[in-house]
Image 1: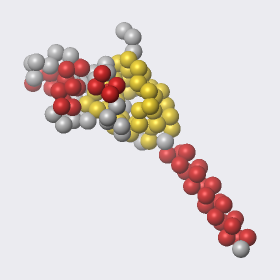
Image 2: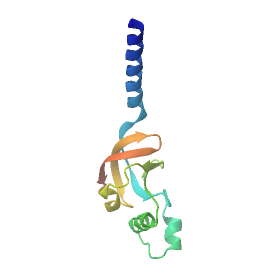
Image 3: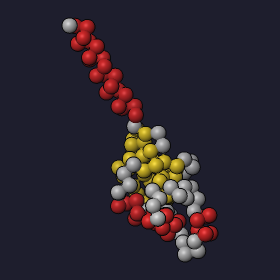
Image 4: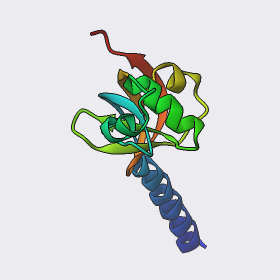
Length: 117
C-alpha cells in the first residue's frame, strides 16, 4: 500500500512539473502580421496596389482567411493561439511588445502594447 501511495505521489509531482515546463510566459518585441505574409508584406503589397501599409495588408489577409501571427524582432514567427483578441486587429501590422505563454512556436497572448515610434 505504501508503495502505491509513493508511486501516485511521484506521478502527480512529475505531471505537475511537466505542465510547468510546457509553456513559459515571455515578453518579446516584434510585429503583428498574418500567416500569408509572415515577416514581409512586400510581395502581397506588390500584387495588391490598394494595400499601402503593413496594417492594410495584415487586415486584408486576415479578412481573406489568414490567421494573425507574431514576428519577433529576431525573425521567428509565432502562431497566436487566441485569435479573437480585439487588440490583434487594432495593432495589425504594427510594432508591439507582446506578453504571453509560449509553447514551441505558439503564443497565447495575455498582454499586447503598441511600441512608440
